[in-house]
Every structure is written in structure tokens, then in C-alpha cells.
Image (cartoon, rainbow, N blue to C red):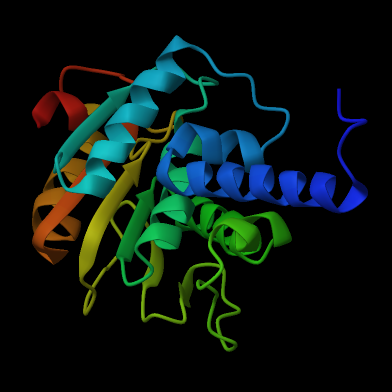
Length: 218
């Protein structure tokens, strides 16, 4: 059915289709995920999460807790793909990411940094890039003064402000007890919670362990 079109017309049609695809990825989080993660297979719970993350980006939701068992893509979404998508749309965003170990937050920061340097990402978000001197995986900045800062649960977050605070699995499976739960809750109140900018959002993603874990206390 394309035989009636010239090569130039076909190239133009392809360019328009690619542009529409990139524009949709910029506005639709789940479409963005499918573009940068070709092997992703979406499920019903992914669509629920995607809608909530879009509400965070739009400022409609300020507090979000996601509780699911391991291996349900909650960390890939909340700690890697969503903050990268948000940075593309709002490159001035300051993000603090905390997990049960600082090294895990650095790993998510490294994945985000590598994705934002990827050609597919740059096609979607053409005006967003990392500063040339942003090489550390746990701390980097965008060309619009946005910032990523990674930390471990219980770690110091002094001198930082956050438009988005992400806490991903604050409890280690190797340290599940009432003392650890109390420590995580006290750290949340005295540390990252105090760093939230006016109008900022908090996303907590975790597997449930006890009525005294961070989700239960909040």
C-alpha cells in the first residue's frame, strides 16, 4: 500500500511517526519505559504505578507509598526510570534517593546517569544533559541545575534540598527487627523529611515486613 508514495514521502512519513512516538514518550511515562526498555512486558500493576508517577510529575499527588513483594519492577520504576523521566521533563528537579545501603542508591544513580546519556533518551529529551563534570554515580547535576543525591538509610543528608524524595526499601532483609524499624523511622523524621522543598513530593517503595516498618509507622 506504500507503493504509490515516493521515497521522499516515505521518509517524511517515517520522520513524523518517530516524532509522534518521542512526543508521546515525553508525556506518557509507560510509553517512555517501553521506548528505553524494549524487553519490558507490562502488567496491570505497572499501569497503576505509571498513572501515580504521572500524578507526582503533574503536582497532583505529593505523597505515594507503593508496597509490593520483590521482583515486581517497583524499584526499576521508582528509583531508575521514573526519576530519569521526571528529570527529562523537569530538568531543574532536585532528587534525594535513599535505600537501605548507600551503594544501592549509587547504583540507581549510575543507571539513571547512563540512561540520560543514551541516544534514545536524548531523542526524547533533546534539551537535557548532564553537566560535564558530573561523573560521580551518587551525586550529579543536569545542565539546568537539577541534582541527584544518593544516600543510605541512616546516612547524613545535610545541606541538601529535595523536590522529590524517594525512599526505596529502607529495611535490609538481613536486619529485620524492632530496633532497625525504630531507627529507620527516626532517621526519616529527622533527616530526609526535613529536606523537602515547599511543594515537594515523597515516594516510598518497599516490601512490607512488619506493622512497625516505615510504611506501617507512616
